[in-house]
Image (cartoon, rainbow, N blue to C red; front, side):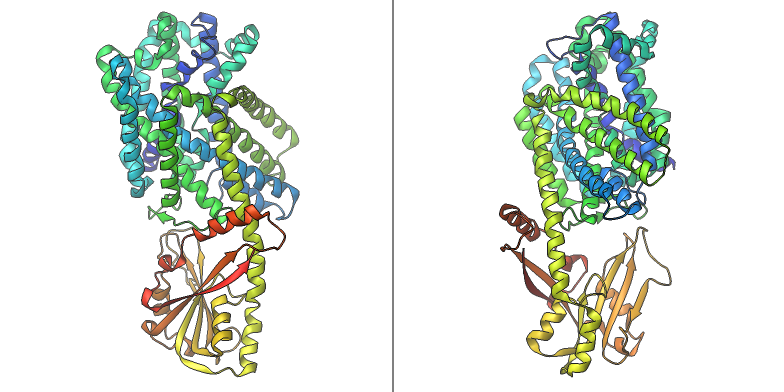
Length: 622
């Protein structure tokens, strides 16, 4: 538990843990310094920040949302899938939940692009506080750091967390140490913890407070990543780390920044770095840079989890997923997502060039995802958990009301960069919905083309088709339909191999599956026709090695009396082409075909020997 908690500190809380670098600085710089460094405004802002973190992160996510784990997985797509599993598959609520999940995942991808860029730039910009003439090196240094970050992703979050955990523990302790002297010097800042100051600030300056809310939301960036990363470490380690270290350190630092601003109004230009003594600023820049690299890790790991969930739900094509831990199924590395994010982050850094410019694009992705998560949680709690209406209303008003204000405040940023996460979301939603719709159409036509496997076996017996020596192995999802490669081979050659083995792998959410029912052999009604189905349950750390499975089952029955090294493997490869059938617009058909061409090949993951593998293609028109 201690190791997982340390790893969670090193991965999960990096994003929200580095918010003090830019949150208050952004609040006091909005709209030509509309928020003033006066007692009323500072207390009001500190109160807003404290209660935003408390309500949204401590109560909503840590206390409530983390309960909604889907077989250990978290994130908005896992939440939507949980609703789908608990309700009738074709109900309207399920359709709405899946659509909201797709939109939320799309916004999270936008967050995953912006967070590494803004976090790294905000830290490196501390160089300008130490040496104002060093502004030109900020962007090149930031780019080098981001390159290094994405290069180490293949090591896996457990190794990265083990490396980053101690650094982040030091970071949070430093946050508290920086803030504490200023709180002691001006203890009146503790009044800012009272919600009355937030209410008074809003009442005295309603328009200014509304605009400020668009920047206050930066203090809770990373809340959704906290949920999305639950599969990497588990619920309890995340809760322990939050309440024992992360939450107290953040509040102490924000209070310290508020006290500093009251003592030195000019410090609003960069209160985080100015609150440190002069001798400590350069080491603080180095530590902050390391912390922001770790902040980026939270959303990158979350993006890996969301992508795998989208693949499982049928909203993305098959991606290569590498499990990097022998204990936690959620600790994964997805190469395609890693390098797509890398490309996007580099482009953003080159376009915006500073954290202040990126801050205008940040809020919409965060607040949109917060709202959608609350909506999905209410659907789950009301429909599946049968919570009473009064409890749903209270949660909806408290969480949803606050997040709706955050979202509305960020709408004003659309023309100043807020269009970026919306554009990313539109692109990703289009990709996901196109793939999901096209996949359903193709699957229906493929099943129709495959036909029933029991019927195929019966026809083979009745037709007396010639049998030729050899072992033909056909990887296939199940035993209900006939593998296309088997049907095509039979119809084209008018012969059938002496031994036909259909192998189905069934993934289980455990590291290694060792139960007695791991391998099930079914002779498909007849024990003398040489056609057999082998079903294999595999854990996420088990090799999906079909030749090894064959070596293990050899000799279990007369139909499996052969040597694996004599077997040939036949893969069904469906070629999709655009056609005139209804169901998708022409441009979406072309998009689906492009996505299908880039899907990962199963041959490598099944460990099939190249010299004995035959890919048999079938074309299906979309």
